[in-house]
Length: 201
Image (cartoon, rainbow, N blue to C red):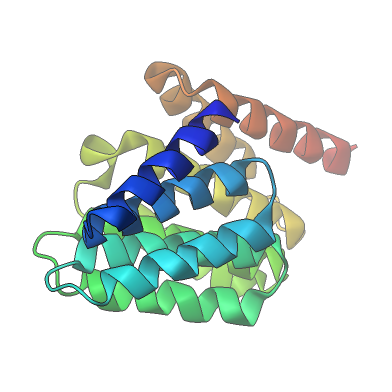
């Protein structure tokens, strides 16, 4: 609540002095907070406002990528999968304009995989997660993303009722997450591991 309040106050000040990029940044920060508390409609509205400001400026590919990626996440949570995929494609469009952004591209591809998995299009989801895992240097440059893709691949296979290699994928993911001390993600993997055990029995 406090963070949202101070972002709102900063937003009003940046509007008064016409700092356009900072106005967009405040809208995006507010949208991020709203998404975390599951105010998806408010989050979507503020992200769209951020985009409107960013589009009036030059060389804001990074901010536009981040905004469209956030919209993709929000719309997946709202179960509007077609719209979510369209937003992720917009995020990739702006990433293509940024040099050496292939790790961020892999992160968006992982998000697209999550959308397909939630959409119950498991083959497409698996394709995306495998692409993330084959991205050059992803394990060394962003181990948390690699571990996430491992977990997501495992759950997609499990939901497709294909348990081959799923236990190994979860074990590898949990090992990396423990090394990175990614507690929230470890909890998610353990939950999915329990799903595997329930399926096996």
